[in-house]
Image (cartoon, rainbow, N blue to C red; front, side, top):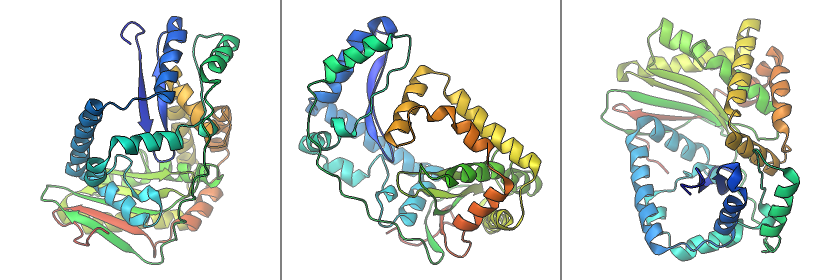
Length: 348
């Protein structure tokens, strides 16, 4: 791998799992051969499982020690009672400790099959030669895939549900969340612009709660879509004594979204920020390959990046108010509070 100036690794997320390779184009044949071998013929040696188990358990502990990460972990768990999105991608101490080599083999046989796979290659390559190479490497990869069971449908909240934990620290962290939308839904573009209007140094939450009222060490809004409905909400880290005022401030700004159209200046700032960050994120070929693979896998088309800026630019102030009314029910949401005055509600 050192000779090829790259490497091969695995990844997992909310909606997908897989492997990726990055190497100098002169080593394309060797690199793709290695990637194919990893995908089709993993050995799962016991020594590597033990090492990665220890690394993962340490990462889980770091997550629990980080108040921001722990706030979101509890927030997701409370919002998604039925759906797997409520489970941490990294796993839990109990599940990671209990994993066996046989579990990994079964998982690989279930998910790493051609019917569920998208392969993208981006770089200084001859596309015809790459196509022939892929056929030669993966042509015999014909493992059958049984249908996957559909995950449970998450019900919308009908009341305010609380979770959290008491942590003796100098800050209190709060997350507020609502069920969001899916990757392929046009509402996703308006939700992203809405949360960007709230976020960033020029956003409403930053200006009102941090600059003007000094209520926040950190504050933001977020929207994360999934193959199934995801999450939309806001987060703030404040001094423990300012927690109630900080929560009231976030709810007030969310209510403004329901009732007041955003200004042309706010709309333009949010759009330029989203589009600019997206295009910067695609400067590396590895990022382009990941983006194409995800877009194709999720049914958007591998070339979705070409139309994404147009989708964002088409969002109007009326679109933002519409999705705010649709997704932000201020009488039914989840709130997670972690800190010295955190919620004592037991985590389910």
